[in-house]
Image (cartoon, rainbow, N blue to C red; front, side, top):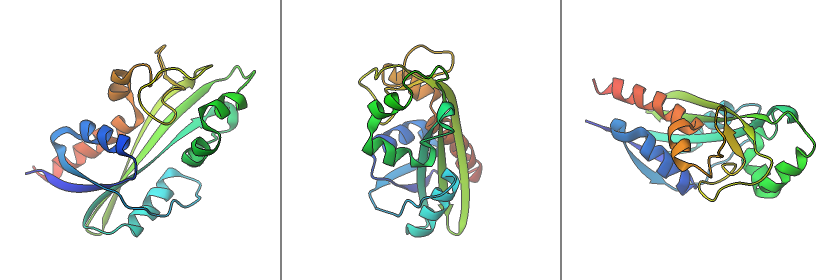
Length: 182
């Protein structure tokens, strides 16, 4: 029997990605609900705070970030805000003339079942492209090139489905959920 979990997010793209990544490990339902995204030092802190705020017995929230080495990890936990204010072109302007384009994408999924909270982290190393490339995906997908690849996530959605930070966190979550039903 699959566990039914409500994924609390305003982002339909995230819901679709997570649903596919979890497969049969859970029955995922989408719930749009606003919650406070605190300013914090880590994605984990943001997720734990959100889990305290949302209601329900089986809920899931996620926070993700782009961490750029040359910018000291910026935008990091502020990725959503930075994307909504300066966007991908603003990130490219910040990196003009910069040779070190290393970056990583990180996703933290927080699951609360009753009073128990579990966190699942996924990361993918890569670099920032020199221009916005591709039309698929969302957020920083047109900028992020996973290590060992030449395409951005937005140019190759099958690449993102296989390698993404969210996929990696979802695999850990799926393993945990499946262990509960054995």
